[in-house]
Length: 212
Length: 83
Image (cartoon, rainbow over all chains, first blue to last red):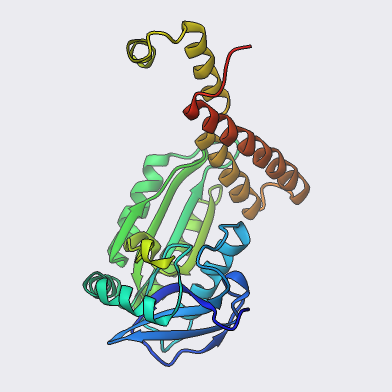
């Protein structure tokens, strides 16, 4: 890492006393915050303002965010898309100042929530009723969540691919509902993932032009 | 409609060129290959596809994707000609 490293941003939160050892993007190893008023950007040092979008780098970005939201003291994180790197703290703070309203709104929209994902996959020999499964998801999971998205059905065998915004204190009930669906439809393959930072429920890319 | 539109917009491009480009688009469908990559990953994670099969399929698909992206770029740039 150079003497004057750039800053890679993973997300925005309100907590300011975060310092974690991580395997970050571009070998960044210490996650810390850069603050502007009540906003705190989660950053690691990086050598470039244009990081390569490799599978490993994207996985590192996700993994760092996941390690943050698993901490009890961190209530809400607004995730940034991959690749947000800035020349220095001053540049980053300037961008945060410009995006302050959007960031505050996003923090309010997902306050106290995480994202959970569920994919239901038809067995190889078929035989499930996709409409019935989707109705079951809607009736059992929608009431336990603050928001839902229907994501890409990228495979013919994928019956449902949904993301849910779930309040932290409803996660146990949500887990139980997933378990019940899993046991009621033994032939269906269930992939339940998370908690993730709520990528599907905020859409913010700050200062991409200002990062160079 | 695409064919007619193309002929109207590019009257000097031959029918053969257009058909050839359409066939290439069909064979090298970038988004379909990306979907196949995601499906391969999902089936592996769910334990339905063994690691060797997953690895082999992944390599094949990534190679196809690389070629498809190159073809797509050339089609956009109009650099593919019928031999």
